[in-house]
Length: 476
Image 1: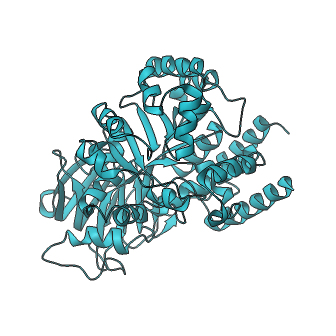
Image 2: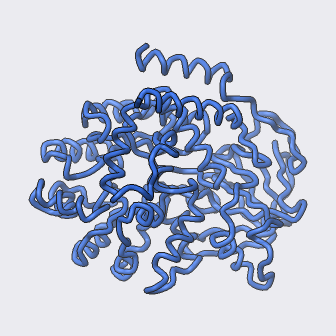
Image 3: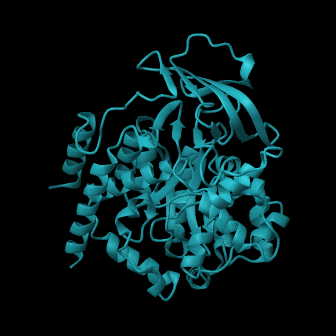
């Protein structure tokens, strides 16, 4: 059966709400539901809201309420200033110990199609990141299109349960990410490999076809180049013209290992930074991940040109890649363009950003301490800036209603200093990492009472296990 026929079957199951899908459940004691198809929402009695203000300062708002219409925040006011007119849903965040609300977390680097590779590779037995990458490509050849779809759903739902509402992913299959994003209602920048490790037939022309139809997709198409040393100059020239034509994003693995940095110079005659500069790709529409083996002069150049950088400290540690020069970027005024990413299940034990923030803190502790507020910005405001999403990453009127609801009376949060609620940010990063209480994306509740509203997770896990074993059988 062709990949296209498999995709049509998947779409049919999605439309009929069968297989892993189920209807949303609106029954919950925190909610007063006045309309099934809700458009106007009031989140009231919020003990603590943490966000950055219009001037990018981290603030804590106590006893505030949030009014939402459709997918936008319309009001953010103290409790008594928002009148309880007729809302379709009223959510009382003050009940049973209260709720802490933060902006949705933003993941700058993921490989959602690799979810089935959990347990496929024994990470600590690989000699280097280069060996791991080679093995990943071998395994991926045995994932069919339907397996990639289930992998993408598994990955996105795990991210959502950890407070992530927006993700940039890159991989071989646009269709798998598109369908998974539509089902899970996730904000997905869906970057497709124009030069792929596992699919040699991928090309810039294939990606351009997707970009030409971008208005019909739920996810947002973008371009990825797995490694620059594998990308011929003619391809880079095509990619440059496509980006200029469609004003899209480009994402690249950069200087992830000493070997990759050296091979690029050998194959291309220059470093990765110089190569991007040569093709006018060293700008704020390009997002590079890892960026470990770059020179001090290149760090200044990257920071000056506002290139987006995704820091992946856990992946770097697991694969023995090296240490990202965070403080050099910070001193070059490049901090505001650094965010965090999960990478994949091959590079991280849990697909969340809170433990990634904590790993960043302890990785760079021997030089200087990254403050908790700085890490919070990297997960929210900086992530939005890197991904060119200027209407996300903050809780302010006019911004998209992407909200995370964390239970206050929970281990990890308690105890905290009531006279200095900012200690909750430190608790969230250092002792948190638990699944969210509720999650909202674009003004819609995706998770309620820790339960996903559009995916039956029990059935999903059963299906993922079957697909994983089928992949292993094919590999044999």
